[in-house]
Image (cartoon, rainbow, N blue to C red):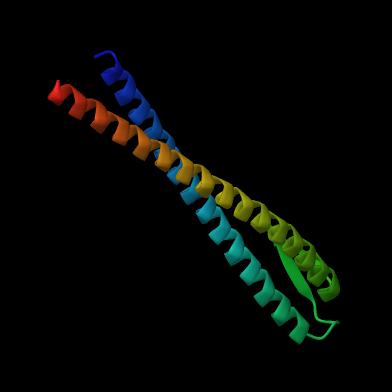
Length: 127
């Protein structure tokens, strides 16, 4: 009879781990989506800047002020920013994969715990 609370605690712990893993995956997916949008926006800005003549006066927003910069400087800044975004996206993809593997492991442990509980209950009913 002492196994019942232990099994229930184990099942609840696995459920909590599954919930936490799902939440972390959702957060990482949202971050990945935000980085994807930033990446796309930087591509669009770069395309627009390439269409401008090099002597065009352009400004970059920095908080509540605007900085006057050359088209080449802003294009270089965008390329550097895009490299950082790409690295962050790769890191997030790796984290998502590891969390999904963790989630699968927790789910399989949860299934095994449920099966052990069913066997325990059926053995008690037969006794």
